[in-house]
Length: 115
Length: 116
Image (cartoon, rainbow over all chains, first blue to last red; front, side, top):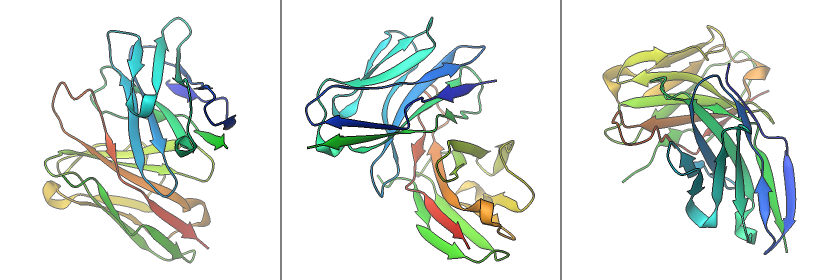
């Protein structure tokens, strides 16, 4: 069965510092991988996705993630964070091809950017 | 283009009462999904509609939950009777059923339900 693990529930980081939010998944088949962000009082917004091809995926707001099949990981990174990046970040996996588009989410990581 | 809209944004009801959540998907999206996040836990899949048909309802917790999508447009999720453990955020999402979209699902802002 699929599962997604986000080990860090909260990550505090100073402004302009780099950050990495970790995501590991388990699946017996190939997968699609996603990162979503939820800003305070807003809905879920897609940051980036890995479907196939290049393992380094670039998303919005300067974020990127690298798919590592051997490590079954899809960690999210940003070289320099801003106060406005304070939000909750969710990693999700969808089996390929399942046809139902069902996502399995992790428990989320709260990123707190400090001045 | 309007995104996925959900109503109400917040709802506080007493245990035993009924609540109906509504979702309007992005126009033209045949696929509509309901997800739920209970406090501090992961976002969990509830069910998936393709047009008016339930494609997958494996995530529905019990028969107190009823989802409908009459006419294949908006959807409602009714909880009757509500229990304390039903409190959480209910997300609706939609997607086009076309290849090349890479399974991207667009989420609404969620309906926050508190059962007291």
